Length: 180
Image (cartoon, rainbow, N blue to C red; front, side, top):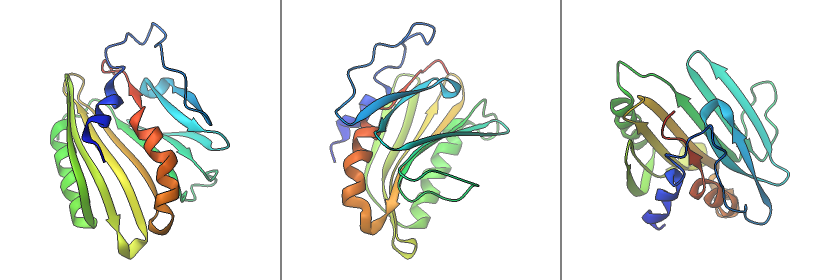
């Protein structure tokens, strides 16, 4: 996996959200899903489902193959959890702890770091064989706003190669406003 592609995640950072960001034409079979609550835009494959949940200061956006109903888990899809105004621990410290905890869950490969102005973080590919789970994760901390982003694309390990064809497109083109 090319580490440079992950910089695209914050490629639209700095665009004033009040101005409509000029996004590129979505790839064939995808459309842009604007998520105002997190000041972000996510690619959504045709036929997939969107859901937004909030609990306390946490906002969770989901783009999933299966429709999420009655809090039942999805098998294949993206989750973006956003925690605002982190104070203790800070978003940066919590991000480091979360990545360490991923390492305790299973095997992490293809790790990388993100350093894009106000936004710093890291990610990788986690396999948890005992749970038949594979995920690409990205944990970002906005140093200026103390906002934490936990971004995961996951699928059953046995379905990963096929699922990742869409997941990679989604993860590489995620647009977040660095003022949020």
